[in-house]
Length: 286
Length: 239
Image (cartoon, rainbow over all chains, first blue to last red; front, side):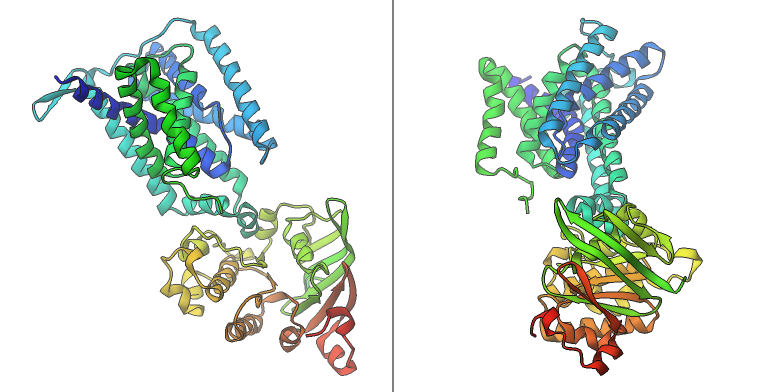
């Protein structure tokens, strides 16, 4: 099989994973203006939770869901107990979330050790599926499908439900939303938990592809950052398309210019930041 | 004294270090329309911000039908049946017209019949119905004002605060807004109407309070002021 076709297939699957990771990052950053630097740690934490749950005898999918739930609760606590006290103080938020990510890294190293741990691909999704005479790893096709389903569900939640409209109202004008009677602070906790839970879920789903290791958090966080800056914060469609763009840049960059993989990844981000700071799909700040 | 829909008593309020309301007291009786007048910077909007809980007063009482609400959150005060049509309208621009109304929907307190729903608001403001799926940010100024009023009504309030609803609108639209206010008053809603334009207010108000430099300088019924021929220009400037 042609090497670039293989790379492309892997990029699409990795893009799906990146979307699961960065959708939450984008929601939290776009809606709440919180640059959540623990997001990579939440991904890693989800993966480690998954490892432990599977070791306890849970199946892969139940483990992924329970881990997502656990990370969502953790995220909700972080928002309620720490970030809640720092409204609008972006520098303080950066420092708190960065510090927390180092703490999570230390804790994870102590609890799960320093060796990479792989998560087995669910039995039903091993092997390859043949599409147009070409074999693709079945699990990676499943990851793409999950990403598409999650994207559709998030879009429906935000655009079609009253809860979604309340969240958007809270972003448009938080003070007015409160005057209207919307409990904005509770909505923000929900959004933060949801974003954290998605990151944790992505960690488990990514396990069979990436495995889990110390430093996974710091590998994933920059990717989420680039996705959100390229796509535009708060824009779901931006995160979706940005995820695949970044996945392609990352995979092809590593394969073809391995010494410059990060240049290939970050240069487009710099250009976008300078030329169109609101991102390709973001709204300009009012 | 359950007949007081809204009571502010001895309110002191500050923006950072600047003292903007000095022992402000006024009341709006149930089913009455209170006109709150004053120059720019007299403290009218600040009084509204205190009432809805955005600016907690440093001292004094705010009561809604006898329930003390000073210092409580805006959400909690909204739940007491207070709705605000804010200065500058402040509709949610990236929400559709229908969503702007839907997010504010609330049942009336105490099991009263549901007066305001999407359907009744649309019946009152047919223009909003025509534009129900449009983003609110694309509406004209007059339509945005209708939407801001409709949004406030969706919470089925007991007390409606309106902060300069005529601001920046063409005379014909102002007349429409005033007609709407009259209808709401006839339905028995207690209303506080903040205005710079004294003439508009005297046409509809039962009671008048005039603020000057953060102090109440006149508190009387509209009829008293009219018959006394009080010279209001010193408090209001000339219109």
